[in-house]
Length: 91
Image 1 (tube, rainbow, N blue to C red):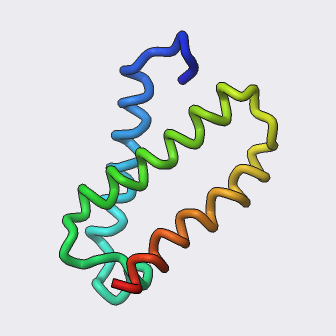
Image 2: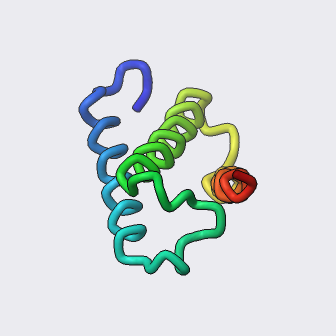
């Protein structure tokens, strides 16, 4: 995932994350989705958006030689994902 890494590896990871998110959203009833998820946006678009963000954070973290622990990264990334849902709720 670093500067000498394979774009195919990054694409595979992003695609797999998107598949998991899409599958979860497809199985959830409309009431089970987090508040603010726009229901008129196709699940594959939302899944690709979230997966791209997560992969981007991971790549930056690895390129910066992992200055934070995985637990710290999870702690600072989770609120960003939640903020996406809260922002959508304002529309």
